[in-house]
Amino acid sequence: MTVPAVKTYMAKPGEVDTKWWLVDAQDKIVGRLASEIAVILMGKHRPTYTPHVDTGDFIVVVNAEKVAFSGNKWTQKTYTRYTGYPGLRVQTAEEVLDRKPEQILREAVRRMLPKNRLGRQMLSKLKIYVGPDHPHQAQQPEPKDLGAK
Image 1 (cartoon, rainbow, N blue to C red):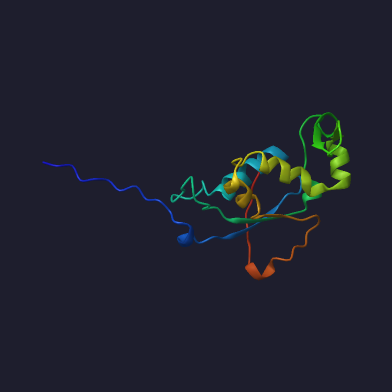
Image 2 (cartoon, rainbow, N blue to C red):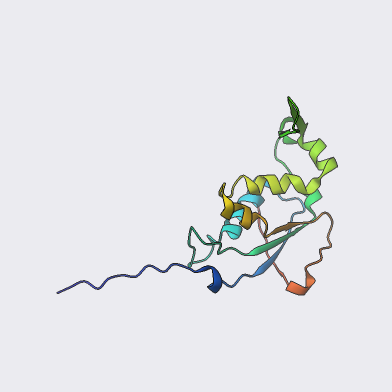
């Protein structure tokens, strides 16, 4: 009696059909929201997840300026960036929110994705907007509730 060989399914880049999701970030905790967004961008919510293929969906986030941090992170959390000159530029979360509100959520999601070409491709499918309007109506994004407490 021989045991039949089990075939493992591997998705191919051309055969993945992507969906568009609309997420409202108003009063959502940044870390909880970012971790769920990262899972969808990587495609880990699908049974056909393949590590070396981008099987994730597109996500449109609106009201990015209304995200929330728990505790005292608005004043204590710092974002460091390199300017090209000696020394680094350090800003608190409040300063980043005033300058580029969408950057807070984008950085949180970026740090949860793979650090390679595939991760950069996944991050390009994340569209973050300040305010309730977005230019992706033609893609008919379905609303999805992420980052619930």
